[in-house]
Image (tube, rainbow, N blue to C red; front, side, top):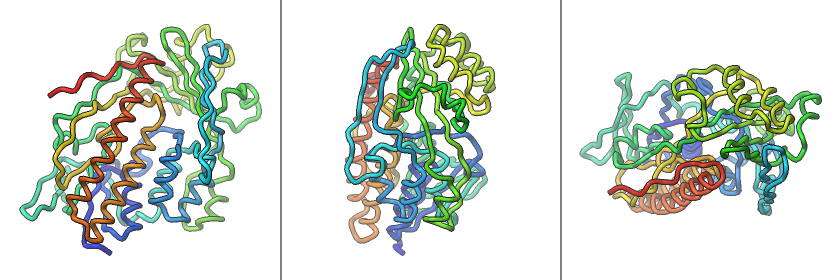
Length: 404
């Protein structure tokens, strides 16, 4: 075990993936998460994992855990088609296949399942109910994280993996901008377990990701999650000590539109319960193909929740210190190209590799600088691409100019 100590703020996918990579590399790591338990709140449903994400997970997970990931992921193919609201095909897209990767490099995973896999083996490294309030830098160069309950944790490195509302970023880079993209989304899921429900969904809408575009750039996104085997069966065969919650097949359903197209205020929207959100969505897809309307109506009300889309604004390089950032804490982006989670996983892979090099003797400042140079390149490229496609396809605001 190395003497290097890494403190991670945030126990989401990126923070846990980093912890896994460091743990495998023999680096001491502790993760501090403000939620009281891993399942305290709904953190979303289906995620597309692309080749970058698959390669990152293969790098940071144990071979056994990676096998569980691959076995519990869905293989919905590689089509990402666009239809109009009468279900006429507007644009067909087939993503390239990546030889040697599960699913040809295109997988659909359940977020909760992936998080449980990433937590496996880290039970003694993750601390819940730890609300981060700020950090101080010691005379020795170490960094101490402070928490709302009066406790603290000191490490050689502090990594802010605490998401779009990152308290780490607010202190470390107060000049970093996160702006409202002027899109609101309503997420839900439609159970696919019953043959009757499945038969009502046109098979052409069950690709890797399907976008249905309506008037005023309103849209519905559809993506299936189909498990190839029960969770208990997969873990019994590959990792008997791993515990995964039971999940059933479902279709993720996302309605989105510009803020001004919703007939309610933001405060009203975010106070609505699932049934009211479903009714609101139905009112906004009136006149669309009846099969699509029926899918919206069949969503489980308990699964429905609203989201405000925000995006970071690419910024100039900063001076490397013992504090750094990862994932949405630095390059949050709209979901227009579906790579936010993959980019965070890639961050975790790159940073784990650089810090493992530092644990083996590479100068720490040099290792962190190398991570930030690489991460800021591909991370902000993804932000720009997401914003451009989101603007073109669904009316997302363009990125503002960089200030200062």
